Amino acid sequence: MSLATRLANHIERSNTGPMWHGPALAQVLDGVTPEQAAARPIAGAHSIWEMVLHAAVWAEIARARVKGERLGDPTPEEDWPAPDAASADAWQRARDRLAESHHLLAADVRSLTDDALKAKVKTLDYTVSVLLHGVVEHSTYHGGQIMMLRKALG
Image 1 (tube, one colour):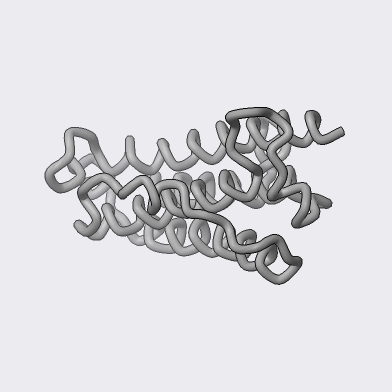
Image 2 (cartoon, one colour; image 1 turned 180 degrees about the horizontal axis):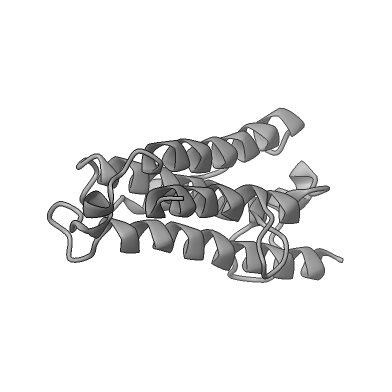
């Protein structure tokens, strides 16, 4: 199995599982209602919904960067998009965006060569491989935060 295929599988698994450390993003979201997703049980913390959109945004940005696009930093509004009004349909759309962002990124990564993974991201000071591993780390980090918010919600 190529390095790109292994990395693509890891990107996809960071959302769907299985992960060795515990539940993946989609798994920590199982059973979360729109009201819970929008809640702020910890003062000053982002909501679950905001974290879901934020993780999706960074998978989308990584995908664009691999293609040589979106090389600048996102605006604060792009980085942390405001959730739609809490409804079952809007919450499902947010979860679908998260799944699709990771799936599409993984699909693109599968076609990369080892040389492409070792190359620096255009205008940035790190390699494509570092960027893609960062997506996995970022998703895992926010999955942990979501678990803490779920505990705070009771």
